[in-house]
Image (cartoon, rainbow, N blue to C red; front, side, top):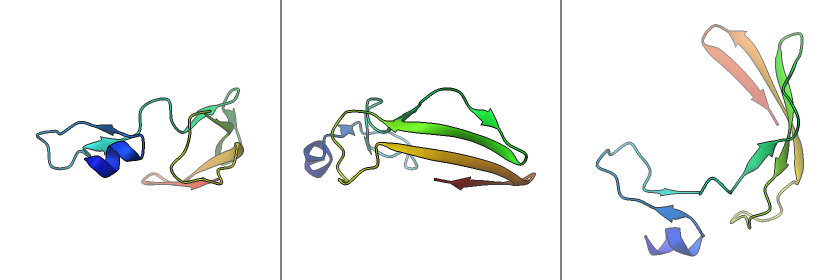
Length: 79
């Protein structure tokens, strides 16, 4: 718990074993910058980093996220 809160994460013990007790708040990470556009094989969008501090450091501020439907059970992501 102490390491979780030192990173700026949220700590919430759960009764389910498969649920992480340490997680980022909704203000961390990235948001879609504009709309998702369809490509010949899937989807693409631009993600912009949210302004909260990151525990990882050296983050990219803008990335292109591409997704491709390769089979009915397989979706491929490229950042």
